[in-house]
Length: 160
Length: 158
Image (cartoon, rainbow over the protein chains, first blue to last red):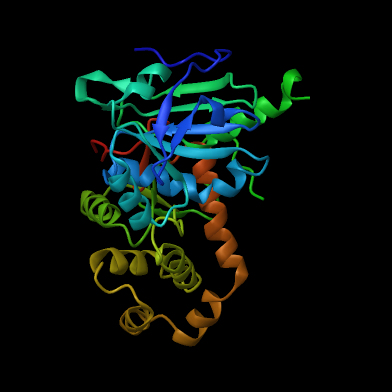
């Protein structure tokens, strides 16, 4: 499964927000969205990833980008995870049907039945501006990659 | 606002803490309230490998991480960084301020000077700069090792 390519209009998808409402492709309009796909709530590696991204959140969001974390965990588990870590990154659940949205983004890891380690940045026009799929689910993308991608997006002609 | 855009791992510099005589030591990003870092530190200490220690202390990871990193820098001003480093990693159950004061007594750290240095903004800045440089290099967890120019989360073969 390959990750959704830059320039692609994001197809229709649906995820569950923490309050039970839906987060869909319509919610991408008008702002830059950073979707962080991670395998499992409470795993050590995912914990470290969300902690470091939280540390960098002021820099990630300075120009209005919004970051969400996506996994196939049910919302209740995600909320417990987020609250235990004390991180503010809103969680989006791809629990039922399992991984349906992740598959649309090319961010599903079939061998383990979980969301893969991937990041997708979507521009205000609903098109992917940057995407990254880790070499393996255990490899954590540095926050520097997100910052670089957001900066490139800001400086592209379409952003002017 | 910090610049977190990509930069390579910084070369060894005057702010680094070095142990051993190898001119190209193993660089380790770590923080003192991290049990995995403690295990790695003990393995490195007993291996005799040359090490360059760099702080990766983030408030989002642990409420004590930044304070302990600054405390170690205060001890470093008295030439006792590695003694403090080993002491913190050797007893992860005692990391609160009274435990630090007790360490100072045992290690011969001047407590008044230690307390004054702990409040020096320059040390907080040094620790924050270290974390920023680490994130710019792609560090996402602790411990992280720089081995053959690459970031690794697993303990390297020494």
